[in-house]
Length: 147
Image (cartoon, rainbow, N blue to C red; front, side, top):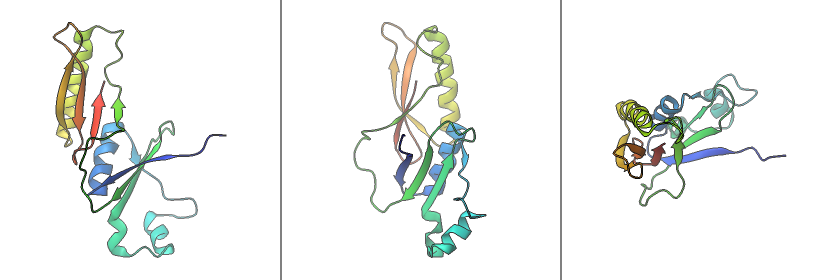
């Protein structure tokens, strides 16, 4: 039996990143734990101080296929490039014409940038003027790619 797991992202603003990644991935706010009607009820039950309630946020795939993602406020800033990152598969795959893939990547990059992301670097398809994938950063600078 596989071990259940969650991706946890350390960040400065848990709610900001939860909103960004929810929109980027088509996720929704994660439901409260079993037995609790709301997250606030869970926090009160576990005696989490009210001033810490914004220090964590969680999102989940409404279809249940993808992993849950939690965001945890930490004091220390990010200082080096991520060793682990997400690749959002939006182009349709390398079996499609490079021009079509590039158009899809450009459209997704515009959408994500409107949500607060930024393009770090474009990578072209070998021997082609078309974009193969984009290295991007979320609103706090965490790396991800769209491929």
